[in-house]
Length: 434
Image (spheres, rainbow, N blue to C red):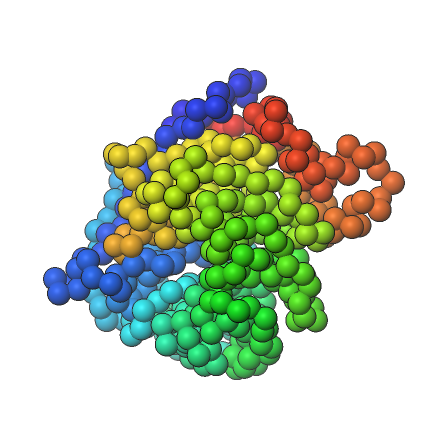
């Protein structure tokens, strides 16, 4: 991909073509090939960037060391995994992470890595014993949401099953850990409830949130752990207090089921995607709609939306086999997959690597595709905004003795007025890398 150089202006009116850099393809047994149950409903990078997890269908989750092995000068390689349907949990090989296969014995709908702090990334136990509750705070764990309503939590290093959480009465459609380094897990289910689990207390359900009238599709915890966003088969986005576990408000505007949501890294913006082909950007503190994006194709069914680690971009995956990456403040995508050569084959999910530069997409046939994305250095003013907004709400910003233009910038109100000069708006926030 050609990347703009500092001091130059790229023509953002024409989307760049996404570059496919690697694929992971499962080899299913012949009787199961291309049958229902082989979908990759979820794919995730670990927060420390050491592992990539994907549900390759038929109850199997693959844990792959990240980055993938180098080949021909490329940072990642194309790979086709052989048949392996037994758990091959083990220790590291020569101090390097080892690939593992987890057999969940149920269709896996959702994945979530438990946070591990940076200082503990090189700390590894040499035995294959399950982690104690004390070790859990420094161990990387993976939660898997299953078809039967159970949630299985695994220790990544050893592959041992730590918890089998029960309580949901239907498919566990989404999982997310609180991003504060703790072990609070939030789950959303087709039983129309959200559950909050405390793994430090043996995985007991701490709270159950009710109010949805349809299946819950997605849930996310804000970066400051103050609120939970959840979306379902309804047209509204629900916001909940993470401190009191009570309902805060609904965000209304979508005309069809809301299928996916994600918070920006500073928590100041919430992006939602719906089956009505609309993407909304919201201020979660005030409930105000900051920007609305529409697709040129009216029958596009969105499946997933994710923010990039720097908060300058977000990606969408849709049923029209197209991957799109949008720059914050622009009303058209800046990167699209180059159909028909390398389309996202019925994409279901997407996830950015924590280091940036790579986006993974999961498909209905159990594959994962890795795409190169823009690598940029955020502007100082964007970094300053992110630093402030990580701990200051929109209401607190508006109460500060600052000029209105500065308040609008800090609360992302500039997105409301940037349509006429959206390319300039984006260029002001980045310095591209060669």
